[in-house]
Image (cartoon, rainbow, N blue to C red):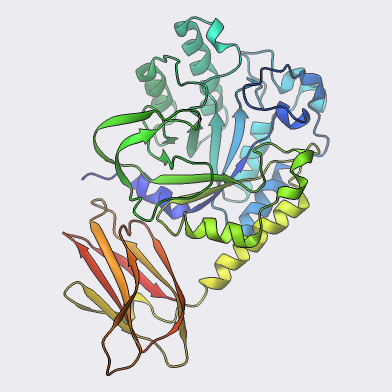
Length: 403
């Protein structure tokens, strides 16, 4: 299997942050596709500070960030020439502001990968003829892909497009011509894929190789692929209940324990974790959200700071990898990584421990896929030796660490 290097590299990003911000931030209670009007005069984030967004998330350990540039409502967070419904029609900075520019500049300042979200569908799009709408779509995407330098990630949302016909060949050729190296999420010519839920949970046997794609949260539709394709998965989820900031969301900040469980069920299952934080009406990330995300980052660093066994400590006997555990240390996690250059090859594995030199090993964990990374939590075991038993044809392990 020929695996593009940029798709393997994407998995190394591991932790990303989503920013749902736009006209809907200023209209409490509005929901996706409710078709309620939202006048641009309400958009006025007087303290907008994208550097605060990116700096906070970088400190928490995020490697990439995605800004909602245009959501389903059609409001453009940049002064688009192809609509009157944009930041140019707002009182913010007397109509001369550009959220996309400030976001991209902040990402570059703090060395974060730049991701842009664009909803292909929007309110009123069904009133346009298909070619007319494709022209509009390509024109706006063209502004985003030619006016802001290198874009690392383009995130298309399938919601609202379930029954719409696009000239997908034309759209994707235009995108690839403008940004040949860009990574595209989930639609038409994808490099990555959606996990199929918005709770951040991936299956233990997820694996990066698939033959179909889930389309959107609003449908059971699955798009079949012509063959097995290496498409790394991303698990999107919200730090609160809703995507956009809402006063009503105040009681719904996820606990550190819940975020940790999601991390283990996303990054720990070989996928990326994409956590949404909605900037508020000031144009800032809420202080409690920043604190909680920082707590997650600190826990990740703390739990995986000092391995008690590294790959160099393991010896191989056939398909079993063995390492002695230093005396007095408890085994909490075993983290295994597979070399994905030729795709994922491991079909299942288990972890066993020898409690002393004289008795047989006991299996304490059973898994299926390894892929980019599998984090195997164990019940804080005292062990004399750890054994990782692997099944698969032609596999190569990249790393094993015990914490």
